[in-house]
Image 1 (cartoon, rainbow, N blue to C red):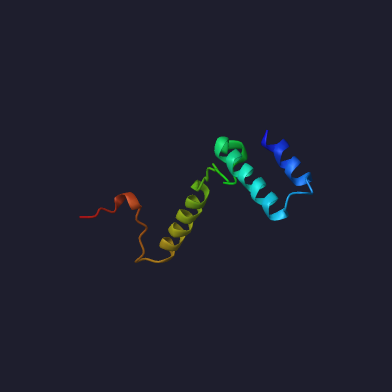
Image 2 (cartoon, rainbow, N blue to C red):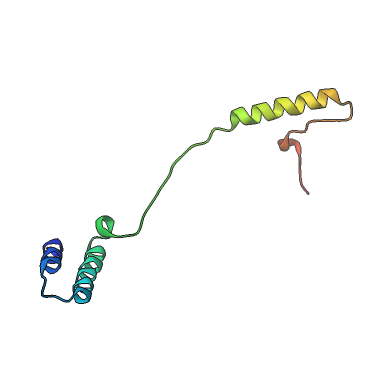
Length: 85
């Protein structure tokens, strides 16, 4: 319904351009409130992405172990072994 009205308003050369713009904006606003899922200007963006860091953790652990083997004083401690009081 509003789309037909908007086309009629835009095509009518007797309507002042500023008034026509207000009339069209009013219909766009009303349409966006009546059916926001389709006509709203708000963008709803949802991204679901799983990131697997096991490979990176394995490589980090391997590098840490190799550094610990090179130095007598170094010791690799698993974060699960650390306790806070």
